[in-house]
Image (tube, rainbow, N blue to C red):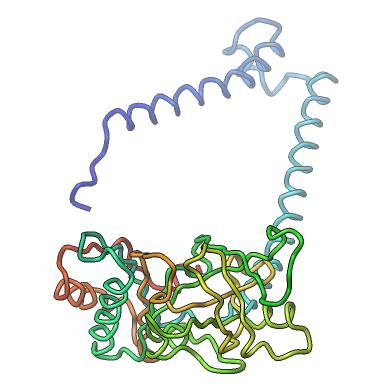
Length: 319
């Protein structure tokens, strides 16, 4: 805020624009007055304005202007009447998670010490453990992809045993690479099976958790637990066993239908992904923004060279 200043050029431009706009839009009524005066000038018209008789042409012009104003006002009222119920309906939509009491902290790792998946996972595990010890913190998660943030990370979703004539016909799923207690931090409910545990790390059997709509559409009337699927990613991305089903989240918008959703441990990613967002949930009644400074210090204590790209509460994202 100390660097904010008034730009002389911008101020001059604003003043000039206002003056020019006023002159241009003031010329139309001035011309009407002059025409009514028969070319006698503006002063006689103003002097004898009370005795002037408005002609039919002037009345027609006024009627057109009044009609246009009525039409525009009516359109504005109709649009407002439609907008308010739509807005109220959006407020009633359950996003599938609880954004209240969550602070998001986006971190982008850089440097040779974070050039492979194991080192990246170890850093975020250490950071999550440190953040969990902050006063009032109840859960800390991390994810490469967050709902309602405009992020797009869709991977092809192929079911083992279901051969497609064209591999491109495989559905795309929003892929979330998660670590730590992501589901408790976002309060995404478990529907069936189990969530990830620390044992589901690098070198462990590849696993995956899917969304409720994904399970219902791809395995209608069946239990998907134990089935195997493959996400796009080349030969380094082996088939994964479904271990759990969680509630759906609205990823792209509250007004849009739920998409296919797949969650995998980020430590089992087929390639290193250094950018993740920490999700810090605090106890009820506590402002998550109040721990922002302490969260920064915990990151600096681990590695002061790593920047925080963005920090904001999830309520602000929803708004």
